[in-house]
Image (tube, rainbow, N blue to C red; front, side, top):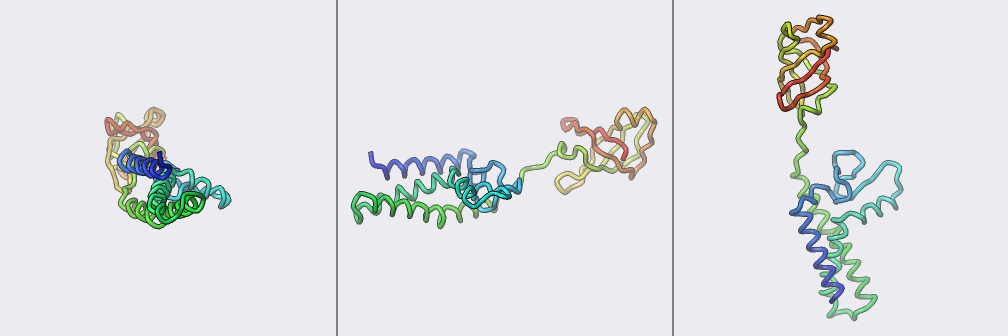
Length: 197
């Protein structure tokens, strides 16, 4: 079989699998949490950890499945298109490889980055509020329960708060407006265990 045809097919199948199979969630494919961790650069270019040299960044970038598959597509298509103009050999291989890189940088990377401008941030759930501050909306009853407000993903959410056992045993009084800390979350029942600050 033909090297350029096989490379084109492998690259195209890989790009389609990433686009429709969920691999597109990882910008650039090299880091599953790109854009969320501060160690990933923007633009689908893989990891860029602080203190790393430029050479290791390029190596990580080349290991990205998106980069590999798109260079394969460009390499295979260029090889097939240039074969009638150039004889088989080193010149054809080098030209196809160079055009594969140009294809990835000039066409695929900008399209990939444009598509990810519309990606939403992952939803933040109530569990992320553990050890966060909360405010008592109502005074707590004799059972140590009352309505609290906590900020989740930039909005105030009101849930049932239960005072932790230690504070309940001390008969601590919680009035509306008291500052509390969330110690545990029961997301299924929309409840939190809280302590006095």
